Length: 258
Image 1 (cartoon, rainbow, N blue to C red):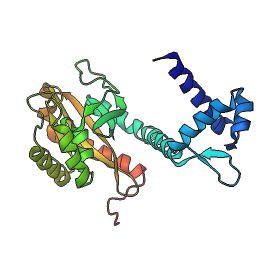
Image 2: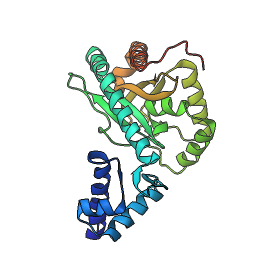
Image 3: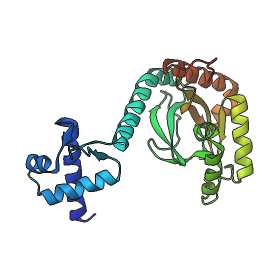
């Protein structure tokens, strides 16, 4: 990355830190004096941040304050932190009792990413690397999260899926297969991944709900197919039960009526 771009990013962060660590609203002049930067530089950065919705200007005072996009991003970070903090002890308990890897995942547009992972104590464990993105349709957690999306998003995802190379021969390949799989997830309340992201890896996943009955994340237990497949019913019960426990801690009530 060019040095000019790095310098611009640094200046942007310095400006944003003023709104977090100092005053809640600033003028271009006050920021310029506080940071020791030319007014033209501050104005250019502020204008870009305003266009992005990160900052907004009070039309009366002409001073800037935090905008809706930054508030939305900060709220999302807080929600993810709270979810991880609440779920982690139960993930540890599940991994310890089953002896398999347990993941807490969320949807990042068309991919899933790990918010938390707990490894078991037994030696024979393997799977995807932590904090790596994976196509949602190829994973159990991804199917759980996709099943909760609106039909328009599902159709958009189907188009995206058509541009991807299937990770294994077992991976879903067509929109028809995906729609059928998601319908089954909604019916039974869990999803399977049998060698779809890695040939010899199996996964069982269940949804986590918030107080508004929205699916906000998913948990899974995964391990070598030779172990997981023979214990499938036991693992399904355990994963669904833990997902329900986490959901209840988030305020979810199973008999919730919208």
